[in-house]
Length: 297
Image (cartoon, rainbow, N blue to C red; front, side):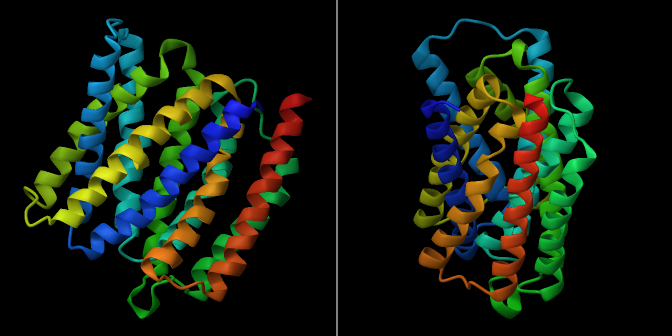
């Protein structure tokens, strides 16, 4: 992996990791979950549009590229944004971040079925079992990171749905990488996904109101550094490294979320999170190393 790729992995991880903490902070400021997910994506979409205008990009995406963008708008934006945001109501940023670490495992499974050059073999089963054991401990011990107010089982169910969707989206983008430029796919994703999210927000919560200055600042941060930047970097990675390698971003996100959540939000580092998270991390790393050896072979 080149130095540029490692920088992209680190920057995307930092953006997505701190976005989880910003989401928890926005919820504490009284911003509703669907409003957080939707306004964040709409603001990021506007930033993407401004960037494309600044670049004077006159290349029109093909119909095939729009079809990829529409799939990504659902699987890699609307579904994970909403489900992860809802999960932050029931567990700490560190807890939800650990669930996000399962994205590389999901990516390896989806890649086996959708990509010809990234097969999945039985030799990865032991490594994946370790990670799944960590998930089981995380849920069964019941440490949510926010005390008695937490509901780890609910957070887990929401997070698992987000993980499955995001992993599929990443592999789908990799499969059709020749059809788009990264910035174009980000724009198409936010355009199509944003429409769905606005509709869901209006139906479920109505028009957002009562958002204070701090809430808007948090939303702006999530849009710029927790959405626009990491998505652009992630799609750039998909065009230059394997889908499984690009999903290494998922390794660092939990660590960033855990540390910043403890520092900024005074979240708890509980035994279940330490033990379960450790097993998840070990299992994901072993799975990735096994997959990389198989791809090289």
